[in-house]
Length: 98
Image 1 (cartoon, one colour):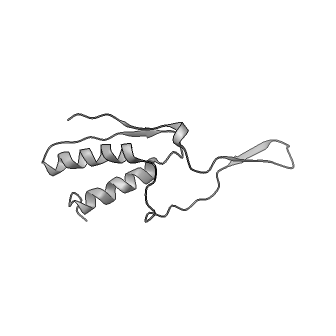
Image 2 (image 1 turned 45 degrees about the horizontal axis):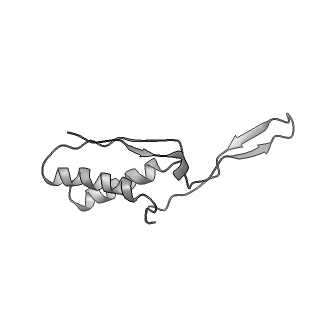
């Protein structure tokens, strides 16, 4: 079993950034993330190299070989979205039951 981690770099972040707003009573800034819904039917954009690595792992499974994938990256960079895409592709190939 071989493979490289799929690294999602900070320069590739296209998601929402932290919002900063002052709290009136204390004058200290409060940080919060905007609420965002993820449309799982939306196409994955700008992740060609990462999707190629995931497809290579799925091809190994097609040939009854082992495969291991590690996703790493900063919060909000798109790891969950990429895992959803991997799940969808694995399911389409018949690698997932139920």
